Length: 500
Length: 105
Image 1 (cartoon, rainbow over the protein chains, first blue to last red):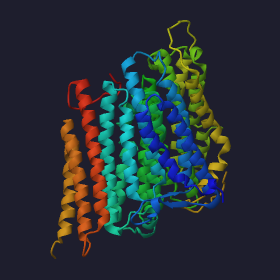
Image 2: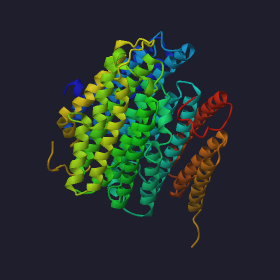
Image 3: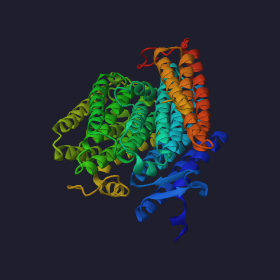
Image 4: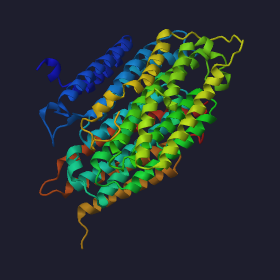
């Protein structure tokens, strides 16, 4: 056993950003470097953890050696490792981008705001990363509540970072909604404790039985998470909050923060309450997802501002995640649907980060993000428009992108269990996504001879967007590895036919 | 059948939660909405304390620890919410959220 094998990496992945949050607050001048170093360090811990989980299966670690019921445990299985890898990769790319974004001297018009944003972005982002990693590793539902709040507070503060009227209003609404969601969740935790006298996920999974208390807890927690996860029709707060934030923040909120709620939903529905959920409840969530896909895509088509379009596209894409609940009812296709949705989360995270970063570059160069006036932007920013297009390919679900594989697996699950309605919906959503992505590109590629004054965009900002969009496309070619990782600790049998 | 004391407190907690939720939806003044969230929170805390009280012969410490953590969280939440509400008032001149603001200022 080497030191690499025995280090409790899962604790380090939480501790590092937590320490860095304090350091970046104290040493503002060095904050970008501390931030990037921590993102890398966190990625190394996640790599160590991945190796451990792949080698010896699901892990559990008692922090401080206290153990249940007094102490706090953290645990990792295939699903949590995959989520951690996602936040590590996105985290490194966004940190590199943000270091340039917040320090660029000729950054648009806001001189005073710039220093303020630079000072607070790094500590908040580090706390966000700590909350996120803690959430993916939580082993009990009360710990989930605490990390959810930690995540929510830093996300709201980041959304307010721009300090303008629209951003503050959006952040205020986001906070009210987020707190309501958390309180619903906490009430669910209290009900479960009242009924089963434990908050441990594993212990609860073995003992929760159908009954009024279990139904009440499931309903409260699900409603809370649907609010926080911006699932249609509770999505109203998301587009303004995501669109009015600085570009790196929009990327983090859209790619990572909303996924945290979905991750908890997965844990609850497939592990904790697997004996309680009914097919009708799954259908209900699926219908909400259908509403999100249709409404979000149509709204995206309707927007005149690029960042709002990308934010509404998040609403639509989150709808796809809800399809796991109706599609996983059939035991044969359960694993396919479950892993398809998790793959969807990964592909969407990469593509949406790339898209928001590219949109940030475009807005930075042009000084605005009105889609109709982006004619000829391709000449000025070929790399960013390329990143936007590649991310679009994954969002639409064209081969060989990650989005394609995810949708393909979803379709497979739908067709093999004879759910033609859901299959049609998946395809219709792709057409709508194609429409709103092409609408932007149509303007961007228009040839015009007007030489508008454009701000210079630093190379690293263009390259980090492009790198993530390439990753989103390449995810389609390396699907086998993540799916194999998902076998570790999967809550259902994994014998599914037609595996990749 | 007599109503057990803990059940009375637990039901009162549920009632507080419902009152807070009602106010959060109906009221538009930001201070009232923040207060409403605090009332909802108190409802959950009362519910948890009622569960702890149920144990014999001494109260169960786990829900009490949760309430303590919850109070810390809710103080932070209230602080953040007040700061944001102040910002909203400073930039819009009103202490209510505008109805539609998606296109931004």
